[in-house]
Image (tube, rainbow, N blue to C red):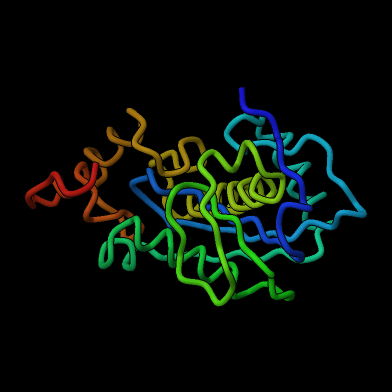
Length: 205
């Protein structure tokens, strides 16, 4: 398993870590976060949000929001995902997250292999959510925030199991789509949804 191996001395300060969550779900927004950690207030246990339990993610998200020098969330909505595709929507959400920071970063480190267009220098870091603490922090608060939104949406759209699968294409979600139909929060360009709508599928799966 990759270990956090980042030295803040490698880059100018302040440094923002940026990550997104929600590329794979059939429903809901894609959410990104940008975090500038405070070197004087280190946070123990940061890691890729997918490797942490839900309880631990929630605990760390609260600590990150309390201890970070700055943090911000950005999102792209379902209609934007359908109009510009999920990759571009993810980059847009990250762009919005960085733009919302109360401090202007000297550089932004982006999880993955693509960088959004930003007002500051940026660098893509493959597996950055497991290697760079600020990116790990961004992945955690983005994941917690999006999960909480899907739980709220579950109350509006009962029967789809959104609180459990968070919009991902689980068997239960696919059965609910077949039974109850497509909701306004579903991504119409994703193949399982397109098939139910009777449109050609295959662009996104």
